[in-house]
Length: 340
Image (cartoon, rainbow, N blue to C red):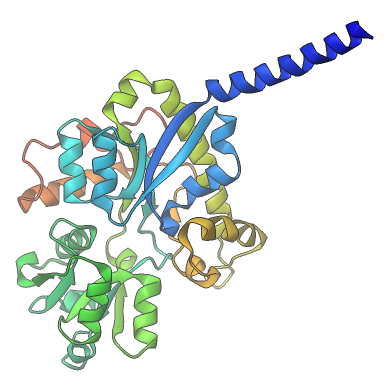
């Protein structure tokens, strides 16, 4: 009996030791992000255990703007980040701190992600399409933001001088909504679901969609240069888990019916509660703001080069910054639009 008890005790001790060893073996990872639907692959990978299967224990640190996410990675306060590209991001990446390793949202035809919204007064005065913006006032968060970049890409595509549009910096999206709703600015660019809500309330008019004019790589997954150089195995495992989350997201939110309308089936319904845990958005808002995210995490690399070039032309990104120096293509195969 004593031998049986001793054997059982040893078995329990061994099991506990194995469990403790597994816990100790897990790499501790901090991820910086915004609580947006566009961050969904991160959340899906966490809640479905994809990080854990790769031996990673992930905690999140959330921010309210894109730039602090990039700063957190560059400073070593977080290991991975997902957010929109901005001039500030590219300047940090250009100084050698960051490496872009995968894709976040992309402005893609069929996915009404970012809308041009005209005020009622400007609409009545003839502002009916994005190409009508010259001579008008556009509200943005700040120079070098993704909204500013969208305007710059539009100017290049349509063929007008970007300086013909007067910019009003308003710091935050709620301020942009207020300004266009009260005719303080002629137009803004807003997330599509917000723009539709403003329009439904009678406070503006959607005059176009960014994806119809300038499809582009809106954001990406990135890490520190130090992680790429010294913890490559950890980066590889994180990317594998992130791509599984992206594939699940695409299966759920990339569907269309025969008429070209977006459809959301059982897989979307299964993922919505996960996304709600992090975003606190309603199911309707999640569906309305579900942008295109490549199911394999592949980047439109040429788009990043174009963005950097335009921001440099405006003096918003340093002249020495080159996209080729910080876009790291080795973790995911099949990236698009590679420059020659």
